[in-house]
Image (tube, rainbow, N blue to C red):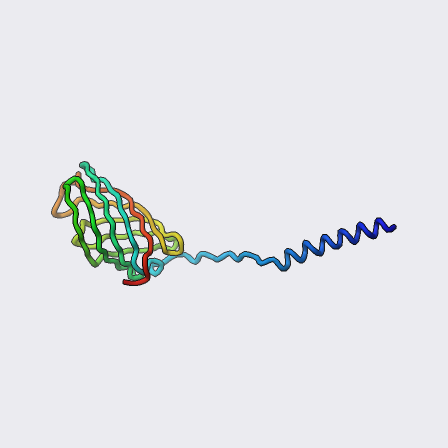
Length: 161
C-alpha cells in the first residue's frame, strides 16, 4: 500500500513539475507577415551589380539608390565597363519601382543611365533585396548586341538621405 501511494505521489509530482514548466515558460510569438508595399522600400540602399553584355565585356557597379517609399527612385553610382575600358560616376532621378504584396518587385532606372529593368525579391523586413536586371540597347546605341543582363544585391544603409 505504501508503494502504491509513493508511486502515485511521484507521478503527481512529475506531472506538476512538467505542467509548471510548460505554463511558466515564455512562449515564442510568431509575427504574421502582412506583405510588402512600396513603403517597404524606403531610404538609401547600397547596391552592387554585376552584368555581362551580349557582345562581350563585363560591367560592375556600386551605387546608392534612394527609394522614396512611393514608387520613385534616384541613384548615384560608380561603374566600370571593361569592354570600353572606361569608368565613371553617374547620378539621376526619375526612376520608378513597384513592390507587390508577396515582396517581389520591379524597377526601371532613371535617365540618363541606359534604361534598365530590374526584378527582385525583398527580404529581412525591407532591409535587403536582390534580383536580376536587364538593359536593352538604348536609343543612342541601337545595337542589340550591347544589351546586358546581370544580378544586383542591395542592403539598406539609412532611412533617409
